[in-house]
Length: 358
Image (tube, rainbow, N blue to C red; front, side, top):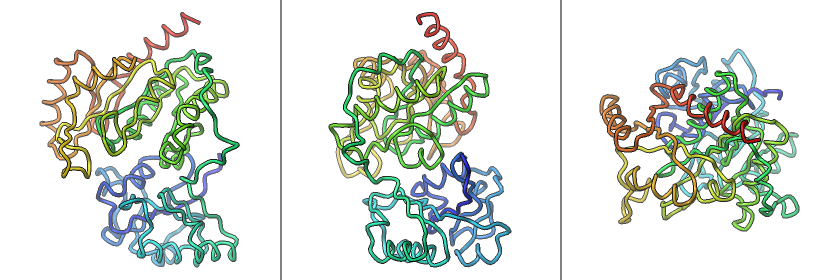
């Protein structure tokens, strides 16, 4: 895969959860070479240091003009790195995208609203011969798949990385798990189910929330089966979306039932008591023990718990980890602080058992 240089637009939200697409790209992408971030709040800094204190040699510029004037390298694309309310493109972002196109940059957009559906931006891109990639644009009907049962052809372990809520870092943990298994000498693959997973370069997957409901199970199965036959991996990790009990977007059953997951890695934030952006509604995030029991009823054992440590001190998070380890009797890891290498032995055993059964 040839990696094009790209800059990421964060609109002053680089240090917030609204820039989770940017955060994923800063942590790593096999599809693009990120050469800068445009964020007016943090010019002159390193994007990695803003994100988590780790230098990644990705400079932050206040404006596109500053990037063009001072960057030692050019870029081909501007990537929308933020999630907006309702997935719409507000006027401020629309103006920035116009500026990007006027300066010769193609646009990569993962929001629900499509840049290619905005007449003046689409016309500008066409006039300049620039590409607009709306990652969430759904497939054509002829390219969609119904569930067939071919999932039984997949003989390697399939691990669903699920969570107790949305926006918990499931994609990041999935990527970490793939990297850890590869480092340990195994062939591991990731099934992306969101726009950022595609932007990070995962080869197999689909955008879950842009897929017609009748085809979600089939697209899930098709992605996993295709990955297995084309890559012949030792293990497959499937990126989760939302959670089983989130009333605004219940998801997870397809990962276990349609993809026949052999196990679950469950991500949880102990500090979050209600579902993200739904504090007005009387629905509360389940205790991990209850979620583990529900996942088992769906048909998959939870093999590990990973902790998102947002809004907690590290010592507080480690206390929770110790408590959950005792209560659940499964390994617990803090992915951002410690990585996930400690979970590798679990998957090594699953791989050995799957090979023995073939």
